[in-house]
Image (cartoon, rainbow, N blue to C red; front, side, top):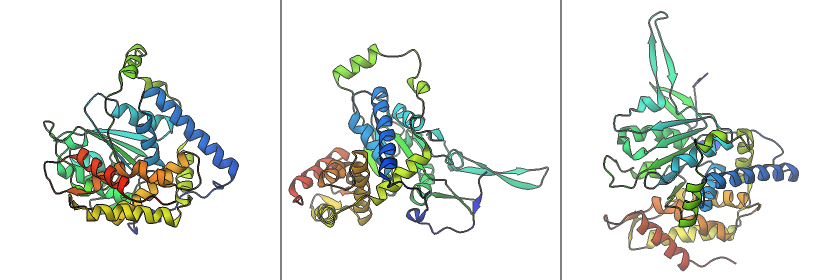
Amino acid sequence: MIVPTDNHDGNPESKEVPHGKVQDPKTREQLLNKIGNVRKQLNLVIRGKSDVIDSVLIAMLAEGSVLLEDVPGVGKTTLAKSVAALIDLSFQRVQCTPDLLPADILGSSIFQPGAGTFEFRPGPIFCDLLIADEINRASPRTQSALLEAMAEGQVTIDGQRYDLEQPFIVIATQNPSGYEGTFPLPESQLDRFLLRLSMNYPDHENEVELLLDQPTDDPNFHLDPAMHRDELISLQRIVRETKVDRKVANYVVELANATRRDSRLKVGCSPRGSKMLVRAAQARAVLLGREFVVPDDVQELAAAVVAHRIALRSVSSGSEEATHIISELIQQTEVPV
């Protein structure tokens, strides 16, 4: 049952998560083994994309959402569905189209003539993992319906606020900008995604294996849960407690300042972008079995976290140019020892 929220502080970071002995070494090791098993099975479903798989898991551990941008048919939706199956998350899938309305995602109040009252019918957004396919085919009005949910973990419908249960994660796919019938995501919407990733085509060898191993039906139907949602929440709490040395935090701020000074950029990385980069680095450290963040964590994730949060002066430049600039700035920024 969906219960309206009478009051809410609007800050997703204030949400309480279940407390358990997640820092107990044995418990921590068990949780890491489970996420490792999820990681292993995903690599069997999506061949040759271990970097993308790791990034998606990092986003989930960091309580963030993911935007997968690429041409149709490279496995974006398959990856999202496989993650939901392996972590035993309740998930809903929305196929975005130009005529999709905000109510189709959020839900609406239906008048019941017999009772003479309105009954709220929740939409697909009330789940653990929302898969928004081809999000940039939806109108800007419908895209904005996700803003409050992704930023604050709640939705407002007919003046009433409803909390979304944790975890709440969005994995959205989109076709490259310029494809027929697409609406570019505005900056405010892009900023709600922790990571922006590209699947790219598989290499020759992995594509050959994909053709030879092609089953007669969808492999996702055979995926048994390797981890439960409560265990994911426990890992998310471990991520929050992962140590970040002051030198690493200073390194992140130096990178952010470099984007703000770069003459090729109209808008640099915001403080929220810096914060998200640290959270992603904490998640990567946990995924790799460490209890502290190192500069490598920051370097590996900087482009995926920051590139969609900056604005280029040249309107003709695309996301690839932004990624290239971030990579250059990483090379130019002194790494702490």
